[in-house]
Length: 494
Image 1 (tube, one colour):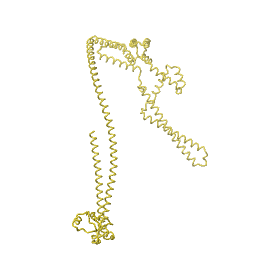
Image 2 (cartoon, helix red, strand yellow):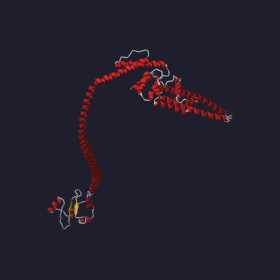
Image 3 (cartoon, one colour):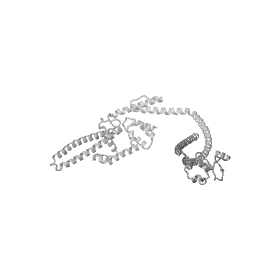
Image 4 (cartoon, helix red, strand yellow):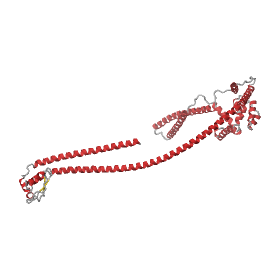
């Protein structure tokens, strides 16, 4: 702390005399106490320079800058290169003085712009240079044309000369803009360097004025420090340096005495307080350690039980997923088979309806056919009913009766009326029945009725099929709706 305080005081010091060689030896031997004593007994400024020069980072930095400058010998004159190589220790200082002088002499009229504005100005300069190169190439081409024999074509020669004059004017303007942009860029670079390297180049101050200001600042700091610590300072003398030394001695002595007295008075109480606090901390440590062990064992048991439950649940979940996958596959197969069976059922239903319609039409086609055959048939069918079969059917009801020959009787009548006639002995033989029948007189009306019946049957069959199709569609819609509600209920339960 004392060494740091002495170095900070030396940096703020305005005094210009050098310290003694003993201070240098103390710094070299790392004897900080002796160095502080010598620094407080002698002038400050040159000691600060010496300590600064002993900084290894700064020495390395200065040597690196000097080496880089000497490697770029093409950027300096022969006289400057000779001067720098002849005095390597003062080379960095010489370069720094030249750069500071150059920056100080730069124009202060230009204001530093942003990085984007400077970059835009650089790109604009590059475009102007490209334009200048194009104009120069065009001028070269026109010069070659003029050197050719254009005397035979005066109009062409006049056009080339006019174009040459226009290109020359444009080249002059472009070169002027390039020079102006480069000058602006150089000013921007100089302004940026001056702002980043120096505090104030516009208002230089004399070393004496700076020294007086720093001395006054040091004195005010000492006075404020004395007021804060309630220390009575000695009266000021003729020399500010001597008075500052005495003030520092008084401040250091008062601080050391105050610390020793406070430590001597408060030491027993602080020791007892520290012992009590240590015991409390030990008890708290034991209690917290025990509680921590209990909590850790309890948490370990809970964590183990949770891990077991997690494994069981994971197994159940995996099994449930497998079962669900199997059920899903079965459901898909069942639905597929159901759709196939439904399609087959629909096809068979359509076939059945078509067969029913054809059957009804066939029945209608045979209405009256038996009467017509009786009236217009051959004698063999009338005289010999055995050749046409042993039964006759009703053209309307479709009921049939069994008949036999002249020597036999009716055995199995199919209608109640015929059965009654057979019982009463009134049933006529087929020959007498067909002999008494007269030819039908309404064959035309029967065919008309047959056609009308066909139309009615077809309409009824079509209506029946349409109703069946509506019922199928409605049944499928209700099945889909029921399945959707079941899925929603299962999702809400999950």
